[in-house]
Length: 609
Image (cartoon, rainbow, N blue to C red):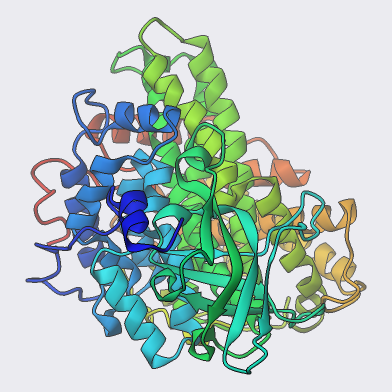
């Protein structure tokens, strides 16, 4: 990247900024309800068209080709920009449509279901940059960011890199005071920055002190305000897939930035990132669940070979199991995102744990689906296998690989001691409305997000759910079995409490290594089980499948197996019941998530009334 007007136009002319016209919300402003979010999601489904149609410029074939060519999907990015998709990342108070994080997830699903890179290029990258401004920026910074995104501009974030072992890479950006005391000078480079080539604003995490928790500060840098030659674009990452299409680098050389570029206070960089990333990364994890949807559909199609009947018996448990895991992922991410608005001081650790656990479930699910697809491969199946191969590459690039897992563990483990001593089995249950999908919850307030967290709403919910199920579980077989499983997870939480209470507290002397990984693994699975029980209990009768105990039994049995709990195998009718629901959704085009909305031509116009 260079800063002369001519070069900037040459570098970024391919959809650097597309004017927004005919925005979906000009004549119907958002009302912050589930129905409104589903309406906007349905509009995107209709706009993007049938992803399986090879003639569709916004279908799977086009995205696989773009990934192979290491380029963005230009046509679809322009389509989203013209539709005003960026307004989803701007709070309603600043002219956008962002009210609640769980509603944003619903609108992200149609985009991520088609292409993860499109989700990042279409807005997630800008969300990562803008959320810090919503959380700690001045009124002028917030106005600048909102105006940029609503006009079709882009923002990116330059984080300090993590080395594979968890340390900081040598590559980093530093900021020092100018000798005349007016502003700071940026120096250094970062080789991997999402959408760096087209960013109008850069949120830079720069080192401003030698060491310690306040070593980094956040600066909002406008390349257009810099002298020529001070910021430059590094070569694009030479790999296929999302990293090759969207990631390049940025370099800064004696780059002057004014004092008003500082976001928050000096040294706030790490704490600010931890506050906002709990929501951002949970959103990505939830959206990636939608990305697995078409792979599971392809596996069902391959296993049934186009027949209306069920697949061969050997595929029942893999297909039903992966579908159940997708419901688990949606349950835990949606629940945490709802809590981010309702209980912003009690969500940090469970939300980070949700991101970490979803990553594991999705990676393992893709392996199971690869076995199904591989055994049914036929000539002409390459596009379907291309989707799977692309998604396997995109998971780490989206922050859900080993580096992302290490980052989550580094945040979770130091807080376990405090939760064990002050929260688990002591904290009050959250309001029941939190787990009712149609119930209103307070909007997301980035400024209220807390780090470190002061509670664990899902652990409290697990304890209460286990007690209620024990009282109810003397009748129907599935309820009795579910109660037994819930108690087993409650016992696991109690064991975790006893072990974590002995850990050193805080981020100074936290446990590391395999023991830390084991603790964070176990805690994440307990959090996921708590979310399943809460969602099952919060059903309001409009979805008989989710209100039934069968899917929850299968979900907890799979989570319990990962924990090594001594649980009985789920009854076969639980498996066949979940498989039946999967086949029904396959035939009717319903989503493989908790909402299960069918985006047919008839309801694409006005879903949810």
